[in-house]
Image (cartoon, rainbow, N blue to C red):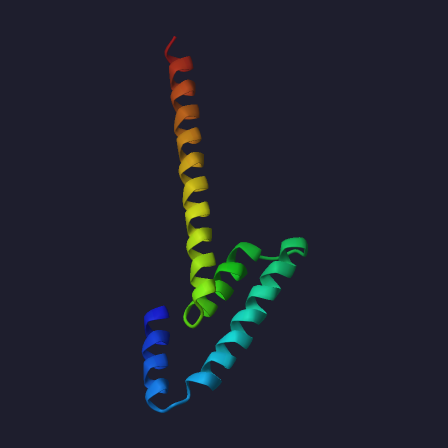
Length: 99
C-alpha cells in the first residue's frame, strides 16, 4: 500500500501537485492519528488507528517515519519479551508435570 502511495506521489510531482498532495496526506493522516489518540481513552481499536495514521503521514513526512519506526521497535521489543515469558512459563509447567 505504501509503495503504491509513493508511486502516486512521484507521478504527482511530475504534474507539480506535490504541495496540495502533502496537504491532503496531512489532513487525512492527521485525522486518523487524532482519532486513534482519542480512542485511547474511548472504546475502540486505538492500536490499529494510531499506526495507520502514522503510516499515512510517513509517506510524506520524515518526523512521522521516525515515530513509526520507534513504535515498531517498541512493539517488537514488547512482543519478544512476551514470547520469552510465555515460553518460560510453559517450561515451568512442563517441568512441574514431569515430577
